[in-house]
Length: 166
Image (cartoon, rainbow, N blue to C red; front, top):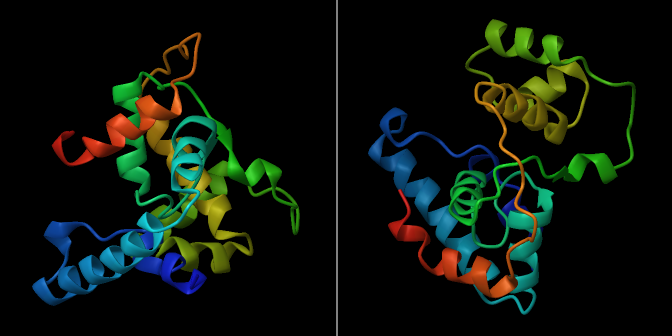
């Protein structure tokens, strides 16, 4: 396994197609395809996908999916409630970073990547991503989670149909 494949900045914060040149988009697609091929051959892909979609809110490219694709899968599966954040389980290196500070830094430096914001604020990349995700999610009410979580088979069925989900 080559972890650097999955930690590429473009996979952690995918570029918008309309903001990328043809060459930049091809480069992103090549990186994504390489990560996808490695993930697809992994023996724990079903369990990894299930955890990333149903149990823990994970940043970046995981289990052959981007954050946006996992969000779409959650909507199809009726998982619109909050998930456990993967950063909650990680040890902290310093004090908490205030949400308003992160949002002010984003407004002050709109062209910075999430990694650059993390360096600017002296916190982890996952902290920045968590705050940005929270800001996006606060624009709509959160419905209640269903009583029974989906099965691995249901998650895999939605994964198989991912290209058709709009």
